[in-house]
Image (cartoon, rainbow, N blue to C red; front, side, top):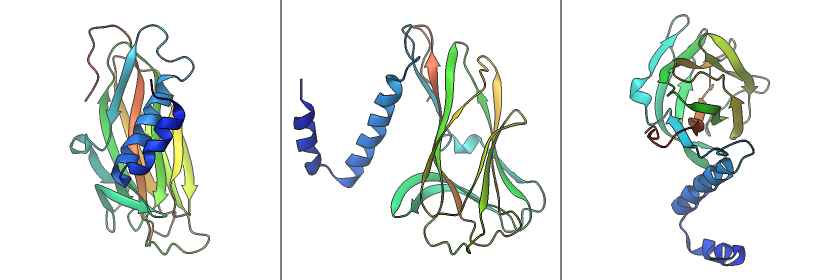
Length: 202
């Protein structure tokens, strides 16, 4: 078995892309050994919001003028990641909604993501963008952001196995949508699924 020193010694030979893949795998391994997870022979289950973007619906709570929603690579402070782009409209909020079927036997659900303002934005001092998440109409998380860097987030999700979760990502320029280049990096639902016959979600 390789020692930690040997593994660290091999990192210099990896490309930037490989290091990114390695970082994601390390995050997964840390999740695997988190307290309370996988104690009864369960295995990981996940739902990737970027991979399943085609299943999302997009809307605005008022006039959609000025709104932009799509997926793509996004750089915040030079750190490039795949993300949901969600520039809010001139007035009100932009909404991305998913209907996610949660299999029976899933527990310990978390939503993991990072929020950011894309590089190149000239968001004025004191102007912030609101980020909000709703599950079945209930607000489960919200924050505001001005800095052009990634902020890692983890949200404990309601336990809803065997049900369909209506999950909304919402951004709002709070009265000034100019340069509100809001992005959600690598948003995923992760949990533990019990039993041996269940397949991990794609």
